[in-house]
Amino acid sequence: MKIKLATFSLILSSALFMSQNTHANEKPFAIAIHGGAGTISKANLTPELRQAYKDKLKEAVDKGSKVLEQGGDSLVAVQTAINVLENSPLFNAGVGSVYTYDGGHELDASIMDGKTMNAGAVAGVRHIANPIDLALAVMNKSEHVMLSGAGAEEFALTQGFTLVANSHFDSDARYQQLLDARQKLQAAQKSEQIAGIEMNDLDYKFGTVGAVALDKNGNLAAGTSTGGMTAKRFGRIGDSPVIGAGTYAENGVCAVSATGHGEFFIRYQVAGDICARVKYQQKSILQAADEVINQRLITAGGSGGVIAVDHRGNIATPFNTEGMYRASRSNGEPAQVMIWQDQ
Ligand code: ASP
Image (cartoon, rainbow, N blue to C red; front, side):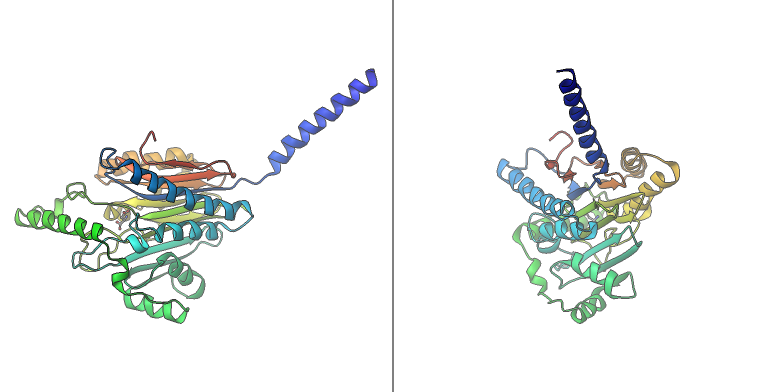
């Protein structure tokens, strides 16, 4: 009986050890996505629309997480998740892109590979349904990092992309937002307040999309895709295609995708600054991202947020606006899908 008990406890402890060991040997993987930050008022978002946003975010994060779970590359997970959001009219990217001041659409996107420090970006493209795919092609198939406008589309043709009409991105809801923004801009122009106009004054609808991921091989990647800001003029380019501003990834450090008032994100190098704090000051991703979004940017007057993941799979999603559409999944655990701070 004594032997049996001893054998039993040996089996039990080795089983426990094995399960702990298996857990320790499992490589962490994680993904976070966003669908834009801004004035997302609880009162204005009907329960149906709220559900529609949450369902689409969940679909995107689930598809990205599946890539990682199956041992796929973080770049593929990022592209997969972003494609889902670009193909939904709910978000300001791909088919849901906002209007420029002149009533057209100009899209920006970028992607970065933390393993190689390679990056690809496109700015001001007018005929590309999924700009993140073209950003990836720029990274992998050209000797450049950022291509813009007609040149980017000429390159797209050499890579087998099909160009779509600019009207592919038209929608009544976005057009109404343009009319409202134009009116407010014209009023500000009259009172010569144009340079100091706050994006909140214009009730700008953000809605850029982005994803960051850590795969089982420890590779970090980040990507961002957007229609930019409603009523943007003169070929304006925001932070989303700017590496270090809207997108950044570096293995062993972190991956970041931003959304918000791009002019601030460019000037404050938001994505790069967060990773620099992690790298050089040994700050946690939570602290670094919080400092930049909730201290530095707030002091500057810049609104928006980021999603960030570090090389261990820790995720931070700070924002200084009313809400930020976002979702995350770590190690295949169920998805967390949120819009406001508390829900
Ligand atoms: N950051 C984007 C831009 O400035 C806008 C957004 O995030 O919604 O173009």
